[in-house]
Length: 343
Ligand code: ZN
Image 1 (cartoon, rainbow, N blue to C red):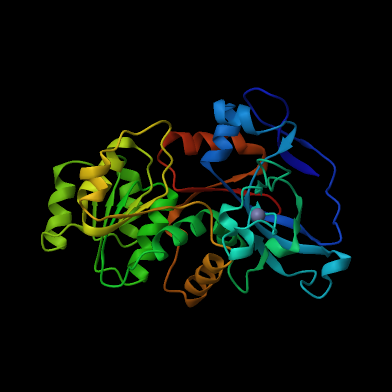
Image 2 (cartoon, rainbow, N blue to C red):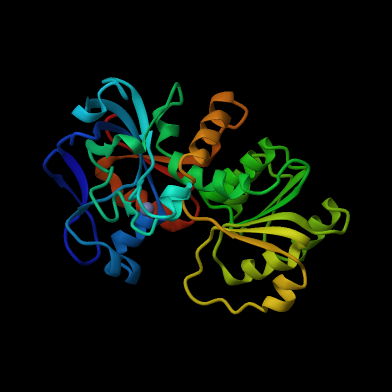
């Protein structure tokens, strides 16, 4: 089968033939139709320090996908049917540790990620443990393919109290833009979206942002105006940029909640006393998707039709053009970038 492969330790990717995976007894074999390209894939392609420490080539990349069930393992017969359209949680967890057994599998320390720690979804076929597979139930595969990153946005937004809240979203990459739409749909009173890139701000506006602003004094003015001078009830920090992290603490109201999803590239000095403690803030670190309440909520929002993520999908490429897909992400102008494989 054709796949996008990191062939060896060093920069670059190749499209080449690799063996089709076999379907283990507890697995579902899926013919991939659409796959989402992520910043993680760019890190692996460019072979940065993180990738060098984590990835063991040769490896098939890709951790966001949706497709069609073509084979069901012997131990999971009856759970899925051939021909069903599905997506999957890309974090494969141990199922036995304290976190896994207390409903916190998203922080399982033995997590293995497809396309990072084992063969991924930029391929014509992928075998997934049936426990990770989710029926799409009418959701198109193009949207199914982005439910992994969109799930990060659902996890970020819906673990805070949103109805009636003033929500500040710092960083409008694809996950930030999803977060804007989710907060609007969940009943936020106002959603203020902030990014340095005007193309991303335009997407955030399409997703329903009350205001879409570049960083600067206008952001504080908007937050104070829309919150009656209190500050934001909920801040979703999606950028990882140190100035934005300080803005998150500064623009949250006293007693507000900070959802941290963006990953800073290094240490960020924080004045814990003035920025967090004296303001009585609650800070929550977002990693992955809650298994599986985030997925359940996401399916309900998508099937209800009131939340439409499609404005965030800006680029589509065939599998042979992975380099163009990565260039689109690197430009900073793209929303979500999709690879069409067996569509
Ligand atoms: Zn575990």
